[in-house]
Image (cartoon, rainbow, N blue to C red; front, side, top):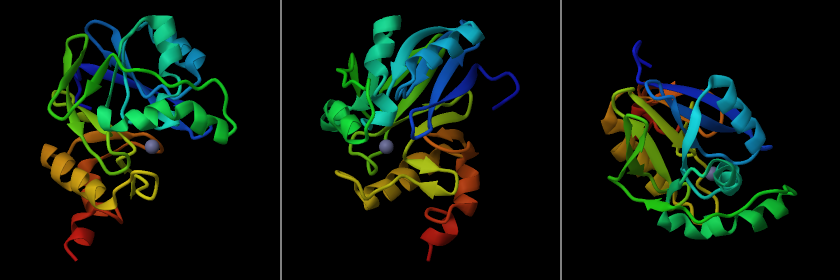
Length: 220
Ligand SMILES: [Zn+2]
């Protein structure tokens, strides 16, 4: 992130899937958007208190339980509106409780977003504006949140350091996933990102080293 970045990002690993829930803070206003509160809502709120930031938005990348399972509870505590994912994930969002039970997890809820997002929308936290990029493939309604000024994206389960999102799940589309990465993300430049699981990286590094979507692999 650039030296005088307009944002700070704090990661809280939530649920048994170690999902990277993110507190994205507008440095000027100390207003905070929580991206993908899959669960462990008390810990997310503790983290917000620790940094002295106010949770005012809840952004959801896609409808899987480890990303959205705590959204309703966090909204109940904070009154922050839930924005995202895209409406193509409505079935996934509504299936969260039943999928959680199958995984033996409790306390997970479905939710109705205050706003379904679509490609080209913008969302705001404090004085920062984020582009919404529809990136189907892992799920049909997956969105990525991108801030140009900070050169940063929260990419959910689309792209990982040295890997890509699973495309063998219900409603996944492997070809759409590759298209999302190469046609929607790569054109943004060498953007730093934090994925839904694992370590941070950048689009530039993945174009060089990622065994699934590097330029070399895809040109074969
Ligand atoms: Zn997922």
